[in-house]
Image 1 (cartoon, rainbow, N blue to C red):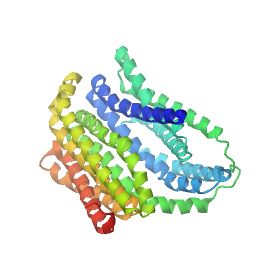
Image 2 (image 1 turned 180 degrees about the vertical axis):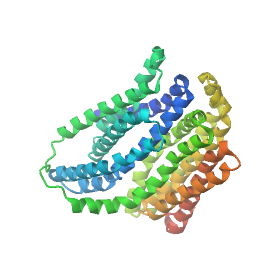
Image 3 (image 1 turned 30 degrees about the horizontal axis):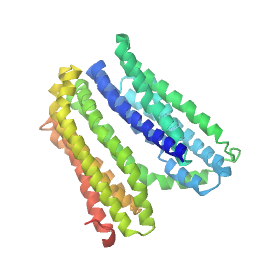
Image 4 (image 1 turned 180 degrees about the horizontal axis):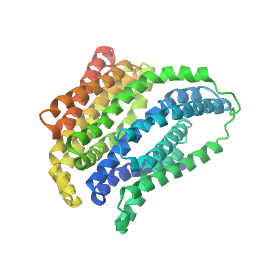
Length: 416
C-alpha cells in the first residue's frame, strides 16, 4: 500500500517538475538568447508540434482501444501494423515538410535540427502513449521528464555558467539529447514487455478501418492546432521576428495555465465524468461538471491575478527592452488563454457523453474565425491582430460548445 502511494506521489512530482521545467525554460531563453532567436525557437517548436499530427495521424486513439480489448499475445501484431502505417506516413510527409524550408517559412540552417527533433519527438510520444495504455504510469512520467523536463534544467544551468553556450544551436542540441534519451528508455521498456505477435503480417484492412475512425478527430485537432501554429507565422509576417520573440515569451507564460489545468484538474475529473455518464448516474455527472467549472474558474482567476501582478517585475529582470515595449499584447493573450480554458468545461461535458460532432465542428470553425478576424484587424491594428484573432477564435469555441451542451444534454444531466 505504501509503495503504491509512493509511486503515485513520485509520478505526480515528475509531471510537476516537467511542467515547471518547461515554464522556466522560456524565461531563461528570454534572458539568455537574442529576441530573434527566441522567436525562431517558438516558430520551430510550433512547427514540430503541428507536424507530429501528420506523422502520427492521431492513430493511437484507435490502437489504444484495440489493444485494451484483447490479450497481450496479439499486441505485437497491432503495434507492427501501426509501425507500418508510421513508415508510410514518414515516406509521404517528411519530403512534403521540406517545403517549409524551400518556401522560406523557416531558415535552412535549422532544417537538420527540425527533422531530427521531429522524428525523435514523434517516436517518444507514441512510446509514452503506449506506456500509459499499459498502465506503466511511472515509466511514462520518466520518459516525459527526459523528453520535456530534465534537458531544459541542464541546458539552463550550463547557459548560466558558460556564456559561449547561450545560442539557439546549444538549446536545440540539448533538446535532441533529451528526446534521444527518452527514446532509449521507451525502447527498453517496450522490450521488457515481451509482447508476442510480431511475426504476424501487416493488417492493412485494420489500418484503413482505424484511419476512418481517427480521421474526423484528426481534422478537428489539426484545425485547433493550426490556430496555435499559424499565429506565430502571422505574427512574424506582421511585426517581425524580434517582436515574435516577445509574443513567444508571453504565450509561454499564458500556456502555463493550460498545463496546470491539464495536469491538476482535467486529468483527474474527466475520467469520472465519462464513467458516471456510462453508468447513467446523473447526480455524479452533474457534480463532476460543477467541480470542473468551479476548479477551472478558480485556478484561472488565481493565475490571472498572479500573472498581472508579476509580469512587469519579471520582464524588468530579463533586461531586454523589447519585452517591456510589447507588454500591451500580454493582457489580450491572457484573455485568449482564459477563454480557451473555459471552453474546456463544455468540451469535457460533451466528450463524456460521446458527443464528438460539436467539438469537431467548433474546432474547424475556430480556425476560420481566427483567419477572418486576424485578417480584418491587421488592416487597422497590426500589433494586436493576432492576439485579438485568438480571442475571437476561442470565444467562438466557448459559445459553440456551451450552446451545444445545453441543447444536447438531457435536463437531468444539466448543471443549470
